[in-house]
Amino acid sequence: MGEEASIAIAAFVLQPPGAVVPPPNFAMVGCGLYRSGFPDAANFCFLTTLRLRSVLCLCPEPYPEENMEFLRENGIKLFQFGIDGCKEPFVDIPEETICEALEVVLDVRNHPLLIHCKRGKHRTGCIVGCLRKLQHWCLTSIFDEYHRFAAAKARVSDQRFIERFDVACMKISSAPFFS
Image (cartoon, rainbow, N blue to C red; front, side, top):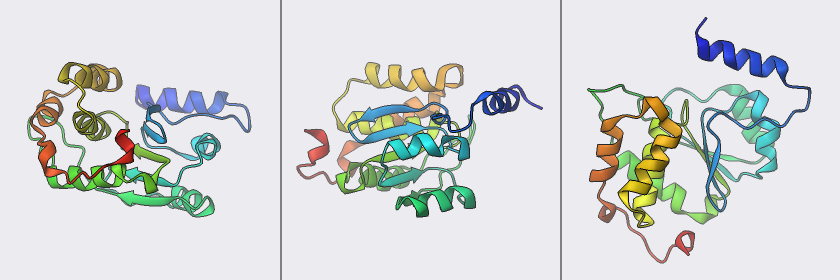
């Protein structure tokens, strides 16, 4: 069993019943906008406190039935943009898919919204990094935030994608999200 799996099992076993446990790599991105790794049943109690309207999943695999049931029970809409979790150097981050996902993020009718991928590092980091570019953050601050979540697993290709991301591909009207 891998070290991450052992830690996850230990964390689950040590939680008292009814514990409010956030998903891995959870953080607030902005008002009504959150990011994390893939949530599971241990995180459902916590997620209900966020009163989510939508979840944006960046993994290509079918969404687990247990999670779908949680979404249905809580009236949460699922947006899924399957982006492969490729490893360097053969990374192909689809800019068109990133733009479509960002349109969901920018639409405040979808908020409160949780963005997640498997670990909440690379795919989620790219979406949030591109959002920060739209918010006119400087690249240094964008990369600092990216590194805070990716840590030792930071990918140069992700940062290069964020740096080269053309914000002009987004059709932004007077989005209340930016105010």
